[in-house]
Image 1 (cartoon, helix red, strand yellow):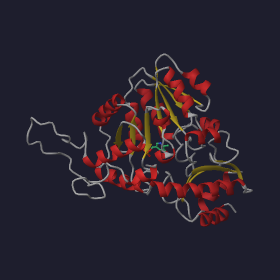
Image 2 (cartoon, rainbow, N blue to C red):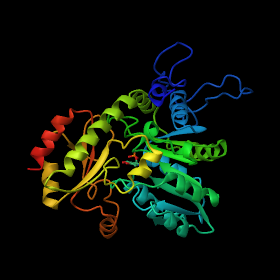
Image 3 (tube, rainbow, N blue to C red):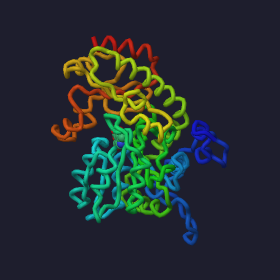
Image 4 (cartoon, helix red, strand yellow):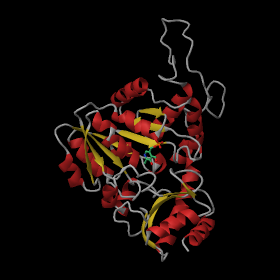
Length: 377
Ligand SMILES: Cc1ncc(COP(=O)(O)O)c(C=O)c1O
């Protein structure tokens, strides 16, 4: 079955007992244990919940992994996955990952003794050079946030495998519809399901998928012990969002492609970042590992004033944090998603005051272009 079909016909999302076409919402926090001699599947909802289980099994199947885990946010998923490591372990991370992942690695986990080296992950030699005897994992995000840089997943995973390292990939921007890192050899995939998987800007939730049972056991120990689990209702919303992911993301991606091309021709625009554009330096690498460029793009205007004016004048974009919803969102990374990165480091990475990130929604593309034209005047 193609992914679009799997999204709707997940064997885990329907209720076999009643035939209900949506997952029953089990809000119970605890489950009666009438016979203590029998080990029940569910005893307490931090440890496991039927609605959450349906979502976890669905994402594991879509990513082609062994076990799925749901968390109370994308950051809870990333942090809980990082929780499988020990103080004194070393992680190599891509330098332009999501600002929240950057912050948790540089602050919280650094305090707990997890060593970190950040590299330009599109450069295999830089990854190799960063590996130390105590390196345990490589943390990647491709396309990267917010400049849509591309990491060659197969090449990075090959380096990790040579040294027995765990590869973790944040697949939020692509979703399993467009990119499945586990099929390329990655060990763990994480998601902010708050974005495309949920799809309606009404839920905050994170997911992780492990490629092996052994990694799954390690992640489960943190999920159950640390306890950053989502509510069953939020799991229900994401399960519902997943059913329409195909039609949403395909349409949003089409709009993003048209808008990216339109922006490249605009006199107020200095640069456009989108993997499908002919001049993207790693376009070929991206399409080797993904079936589409997604619905997120970034652009730089010639001056900061133009960027700020655009955000103030646009009527159809929500100037907001986040992405992946049915409504177009314009983010200002230096003040929003990447505010946690020190200004000098941001400047070095190219995350400047004139950069705007767009997540294209389901509005009519001509309407969006007319609004952008007006906002850039
Ligand atoms: C790529 C990426 N990963 C992780 C996160 C964190 O997810 P959440 O906001 O659900 O905690 C985000 C949030 O913007 C993101 O864009």
